[in-house]
Image (cartoon, rainbow, N blue to C red; front, side, top):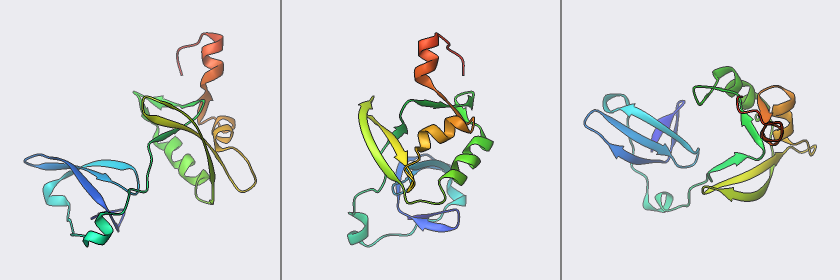
Length: 137
């Protein structure tokens, strides 16, 4: 395990380079490149190490977040985090594309997060982009 934002989480060391590691936080679904001198690992009891990962690769169905150079803008990331603070949420799964599950996420009031991010201008409806023949986002 290693710390992420001050809290220890289970990690998998994906790559071990001379000066850095590429680690995956298996229960958060995040990947991070860290310098060897800046990271501290602690061993887990085998009981905890063999538990299944708590994340599944997925994407919000039918939307594309607005981005710069194929990366989510920091302000969009912050707004999305704020929208996700007050769970619980219900996830409906759909098809898979390239091994990634398409999902729609609903809050307790049955509001769809996919629609909310479009309404708030954080993402665009990709179905309408392709129908209208637009390619830019």
